[in-house]
Image (spheres, helix red, strand yellow):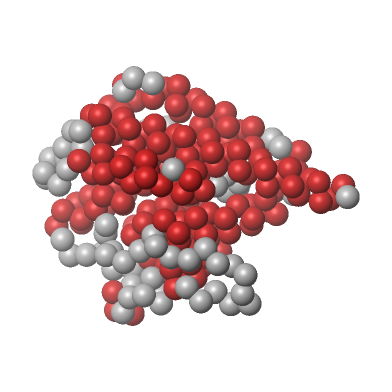
Length: 256
């Protein structure tokens, strides 16, 4: 599957709704939605969800940093690694970013990059997508897809994630931005409205498979797109289990 401008990939507008016809996708959607709902219903998360969400966002930032070649070291009084520091800054604003995302996803993306790349890119380039026409087209189409709300949240999250990895809109820490955008998209679309899951940890644990699947999405073949959807699904299932483990640990700490 290729976009009409020839940039490749299976994101908008080659037909995100067509992804729903892929074998097994309906089942994948149901599994992700059920896992996210079960996590939200955890006893700790009925009232104490802010603690789970805070822990989840930090784990997500650490995993995302490692996937982009940064550090995962959180032991010091201050974070020295610029990739990790940027990922943490984005994580700290995920709630506000989700609010902006609902009405202006490209504005939210710009803010994510400004936060993530603050120590890595010149000030004048922060939040500014590359001038490449193909990048500009794909970003506009992605924004249209977010506004249209025509696909289930798990598919939307996969498209957002895959497209941003594929087109590398900013040229600096695009992986951190892509994963943050996928996380924010999941919050904004009410898949995981409180940000309790940690799919980034699942991606890190399967980083070779994750990278290969992202390349498949970028290539735009049906096989590559199907593989990407499967890998994203598995990461969200892994992430829901990690979110449950966080909640279980908090429950244990409260009862001791």
